[in-house]
Amino acid sequence: MLLSQTVSVLTTVFPAALRSSALAVLWEVAEMAEEKDVAEKTIAEDLVVTKYKMAGEIVNRVLKQVIDKCKAGASVREICEYGDQLLTDETSKVFKKEKELKKGIAFPTCVSVNNCICHYSPVPSEPDYILKDGDVAKVDLGVHIDGFIAVVAHTIVVGASSDKKITGRKADVILAAHYASQAALRLLKPGNETYTITDAVQKAAEAFKCKPVEGMLSHQLKQFKIDGEKTIIQNPNDAQRKEHEKFELDKHEVYAMDVLISTGEGVGKETETRVSVYKKTDETYQLKLKASRMFYTEVRSKYGNMPFNLRTFQDETKAKMGVVECVKNKLIEPFQVLYEKPGEFVAHFKFTVLLMPNGPHRITGLPLDTDQFKSEYSITDPELRTVLCSSANPKAAKKKKKKSESGGAATTEEGATAQGQPAAAAADQQQQQPMEVEATA
Image (cartoon, rainbow, N blue to C red):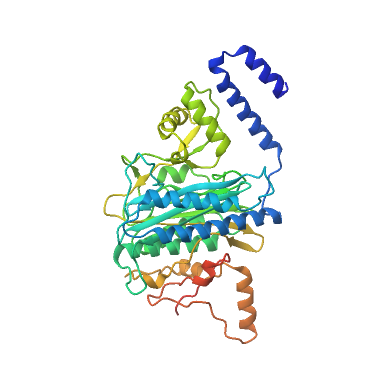
């Protein structure tokens, strides 16, 4: 039956009260069928790579500006609003002539502080948080261009400066998360198995007497899909290890590598903090309440399958009413605000990586100046050190090898830190090319 004929039947059969809900479900099914008919676009196409890179450039620029706002006395809510406005403004400047091309926020700005693990981005009616010197702040955000998603997360210590090193457990957890993410980057290669990355992240965390947050997933990214089928789990418990499927990485795939490390037990729990970030699922259901139907219709038209914040709705009260029935019937899923135990610290680094035929190509992420941190711990595991000392940039590795063979002195952009850690090359981190590291002898 043609869609237009089906709509005509619905308007006759269904009572007016249920008609809009039934039509919404019908259009949802039609859209899903249409999406399946379209051939999947991958980074095998140059234009797709270009869109990913453009999204990555926007994300990195905005992340810098948001971090600059993270100062003592600043409101987290205002920082998040500022970040979201920047993301919207920046994406509006690209592909202006292509009116039908969708673009915008792929993950709303969140700033999670100290023992708050993730997804803190309060709406006006909920309690705010005012930053203080010494706070460990994790900034998380993302955009998409034509559904091609670039996300990023970075951790800073509020008020930190180059002349005063960060020490103690704050240094431990940030360095652990940093080296875990760099090990993951080097292992994100076609042919590798996902649990190879899981184990490397675990080793890096344990080296600093920290733990990865249990059960957190890094997802494969696809066009208009932030939670693709293939996932990389960190610190799985026994049940999760049995249930979670192992995957092999393949070329032309894209991943959001998400590393969250804690000084505590690594188990996230919900508190009284209300959820503000949600996303639409592919489930269907006939909503009963008018407020729910209006809310869901707005979600579908404005955000599609991308995560959104309730703060963006004109009437927050109605949005809060509408989201309840949607979540109950799994049309909308929440991004829970999770916490470690009070007094603990959590660090978060996330980057988007394209698995190109010649190796991983990281398009998001800012450099971390490891010289600002001093820990009594270090990476000692030989296997992990070998991974961290390898090049994440195949082209750079080939150049280095050629130079070495020709008798020239091959050096990295940055040597080892004073603590003997495999050091990150800040210049490489800041560019879109992955970095190269070298350990002390």
